[in-house]
Length: 355
Image (tube, one colour):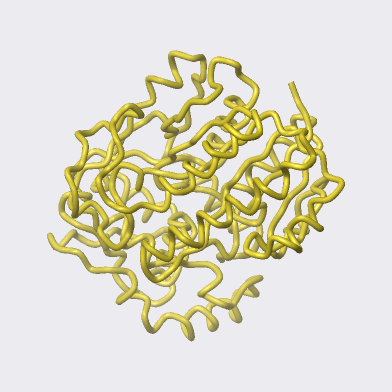
């Protein structure tokens, strides 16, 4: 089954991959962003600001979407501001599409901060649920903008009668430029700088993350999961974890990432060495690398998000995710996480974003 999709956040790592997936499957796809991408063949761009209800209604006038996918958020200095801003974005969007009375399904992408807590108290406050994380585990007793986004979807669904799904990926690996949370591209840039300068390729995270089991989510698999939930009656009005289906330890993965770039992984020193500090002086270094190799983007800030990689790899707890709920309902897709990284690196090289 296909329909008319509105992908909100089409320029981001999730929305970009989802739009490409839906177009390839025969959907009619509108891509909403403040600056919609121009490199996705078949995407109908919608330029709009989710915080400006008047312009948002005007931009969406005449679009009769059967399925809406919310794949965006805006980082704020505090969680209270995250709740206010990101809750308003979802509320404004669903109010703007309500008059068309055409929406059958809304898919919302959140993440494992549902179980771990927000960035300002990441895996440090409240009573964290046991791993592997399962969808039936209750919300943490702390403020979390993911909960606010969910509540806006639930309220609009009760008012307007559409079905919904919530998708909770782990760290997402995929192609997007200018994304706020992009570990794959960040590590590609970091490894390139290490190769070009002779710096050690040092794991930046905690001893727990280095030695414990973990998992990740390929943006392409997440796109398939979003389409599946939107077109499967048994998945209606359900929340789902979504990860690749394999587990690994960073002490196993790190040397494999290094090998792809033709370098050796440094011995782990037993304590975090955050990328924000390691890459603090890297802006001019990257500009020089881009000049020498004729790369397409010389602004390191549009490629790497070291703060986010530090947050993920610095966690003091094991993070493993259960996919049984999706499996029981028929979603059986699997993706090797090592291949997710290698596929991304190859695409970055083809796009001349890394040498």
